[in-house]
Image (tube, rainbow, N blue to C red; front, side):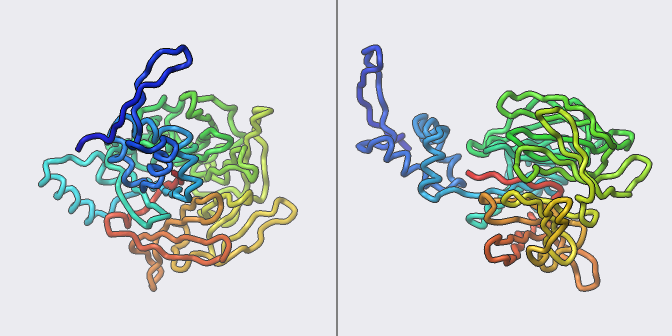
Length: 383
């Protein structure tokens, strides 16, 4: 297919003649960008291949602004997910017949749920993902961090970053400490990691922060306590990182009901008591409020004086202790992933629940079989 081009000579600021190629022949470029901005995100990779002009236009702030103004933004939820064994085997056999090797590990990989369109897909271009890796997003960048080496089962320090707007992955500088089961979240434009455990299963109190723009790590002071299997989130203002609960090496499985938040101005950790709701709860910040999803209700934290208050019912059919949650659409919806509880109290397939913050209603999303595995970590990006 020929690229849509129309050429004209223009003068730059120095009076030198330069060639200008119209994005769409006979159409002003600003109007052309408005048209391209309405192309669904799933077709962006093909759109960028049409010509260099379209590829360049799709990478500009004007393109992102045009999508927002046209109401064409799409909310993508990235899930670091264990594959459904039967579906993974079928997919591997299909890839083998086609002569292709799947880029993702068959055991653990990156799935994408488009909340706006309801579509599911696999991130086929993703590098091999360590088991129990975590993910967090800054703008349109998704970082996949740490986890276990699938062969040695030892923690790794690897970091890979996806630019969700272009679909391009790259390796980033590794964390200073190999860790798994750690707190991880974006706060103030940086991705924080804290706690977890090392290869000897010793709980950690070390922490560091990744600057996606500078592509560099900032070592942080240690927390006051070791915290294995702690949760990470931004504080209510969205500018500070919070490491919630976890347990010390000597108290395996004894989750604490407290937290620590990092004060970037003082470069010090501050302690918060009575923050944790029931252990294994999923925490998410919604419109400046910390929510806890567990038990029979969705609870909101009102501070040390106000405690917890109920804001809505829990996801129907969600098995306790399996939830992961992320806020999408600027606080319009909360997406929860977890196991579906059977009538006998067991769990079978996994599903998603989408909570409408305005109506307080849940919608159950049952994914295709190949996306019905357990999701260990989730993050959201708006394109």
